[in-house]
Length: 266
Ligand code: SF4
Image 1 (tube, rainbow, N blue to C red):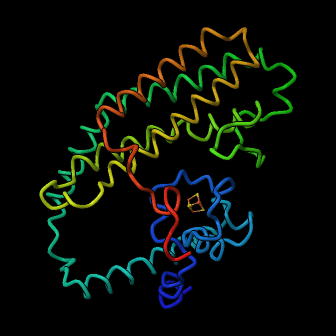
Image 2: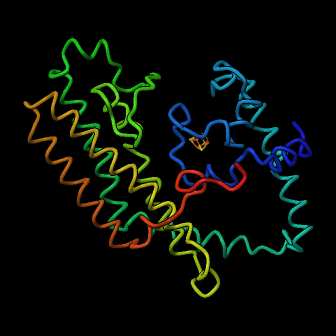
C-alpha cells in the first residue's frame, strides 16, 4: 500500500469522512462498513482472519508498513500546512500529557467506569454456577459473531446481551478517559465554534452505557436469582450515566459523522 493509494481512497465520496472517530469499533455490527475508509484499509492490509492474528509475523509487518506510511503522510501534511515538526518541545508536551492523564484517571467518571469494568468481571466470575450448562454453549470471554441486534443496537437475546456487556465493559472507561483528557486539552477560545471532540467521545461512552443498561436488563430477565447483584450494576451504570451527562451537557447533541446524520456524499 502506498500513500497515493491512501489519498485516492480518502477522496472517494463513498467514504464518510471521520466516521471511525466516534464509533464503538464493533465493525461486525456496524451499519456503515461499506462507507468506512478505516475498515477498507484494515481489510486491504489484513485480508483474512489469520493475518489479523497479533502473533502472526504478517500482522506486525503490516503494522510497520502502516507506521511508515503514516509518517510519510504526516511529513507531507506538515510541509503543506507549514508546521515545523522539529520545533516541538517534547519534554513540555510529555509533562502536560502526563498531567492530563493523571487528572483524567482520578476523575470521578473514569474511576467509576473502571470500577464498573471490575464489577462486570466479578459478576461473570460469580455467575458461573448460575450459567451451569449454558457456559459451555456460551463462551463468556470471547465474542462470537452473532449478528442479532435490534435497529437501535438493543440486545435481542441473552447471548446478544452478554456480547454487548462484554464489548462495552472496558470501552466506557477508555472513551471517558479520552473525553476528560480532550476536555483538558481543548482551548475554548479557539474551538468555540466547532463541536468538541470531548463531547463526541462522551457521547460514544453514553451510548455504550445505555446499551449496557439495556443488556443487563435482558440478563436480569434470565437470571432472577442474581437480581440484587444486577441491580447494583444497573444502579452504578445509571450513576455514571447521570454524572457524564452533567459533566458533558452537550454530549447527547453531538453529531457523529454518518451515525447521526445522512452524509452529503451519499
Ligand atoms: S465506523 Fe463502523 S466499520 Fe468503521 S471502524 Fe467504526 S465500527 Fe468499524
